[in-house]
Length: 440
Image (cartoon, rainbow, N blue to C red; front, top):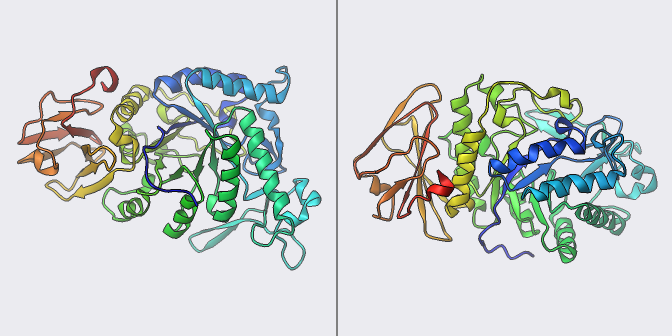
């Protein structure tokens, strides 16, 4: 079992370049400079392999063949085109992570005929399809075939296939894997797969998609060797207890990654009716709440059209007139500068004064540092925060520095009052000189 003693996590600031929107590999290069300049250090791409009859990139037909829509017609060898894209990202300081989908494949994959013992079959001899419950409604994905990890007639063959796939992707330059619906694969299978993969490639990182998992399921996956999990901070209403409860159960075991939106959700700009204050509010909170942050392509430009695993094409690139890249860059530099925002720190919410202002204390178990996030929950109007003694929120009595991404104050007196614009956040750190060149 993995030693889950918490250690300083590797910085994980992911930019999700959705491949169907980005188009063929040569066009990816035009994005890398912008991604780097915003302060991201990882590039995450969804599945790049050949899909099956449904066309969904998560319904993989051939794990060892590249999706034709990502290839330039005159670009030469598919594997070389893939390597070239990864190498171009690396040249901009971006490590590259790819989706690893091993809980199912497409219904028309040759694997069903070649290795029927790898799959689940019902009493009528039909392959079992994965499903999910949306409320009381059972949603079955008929284009998918579920692998059998409980009673497979050939468990060693299935395991060896995935070892080979990870080796294949690592040889293409991928250094990380977002493991889709990781809880649908038994933890002991993950433990062996991750362990053997890291014996050959020690630098590989594995991030488990654990959304919807029970705490027990998440704990089992952590012990299987995952380096990161994904959290549900995107859906927090800034007042319920569930997010902090979830975070408390896992924060000492594994760092997590939050996101303001993902390819599975509606676009936040669409949800908020174009309210940019709300977008900035959610990004700031998500970036500072947990160790890692993931942001999908287009968030920075206020895209409104949801990413689609079949229908999205480069023609869906939107011209919005919105550009949040300066703000996102400031938040990312703030996160990169102060280590407390790169770990699963202790988080405590204070019910103090104005209920429209979130007052969240963060305390590092690694460095002993503290921080206070003041966040206006109201994305339409200004709100005031007042404290008779701001030091009362901290253990330290050291002078406090305002390191906020915008509208900083030069001095933070003990009796502190500040008007927060719609959705605005303030970040205060005691005993820490402002690093102007990096976090300004």
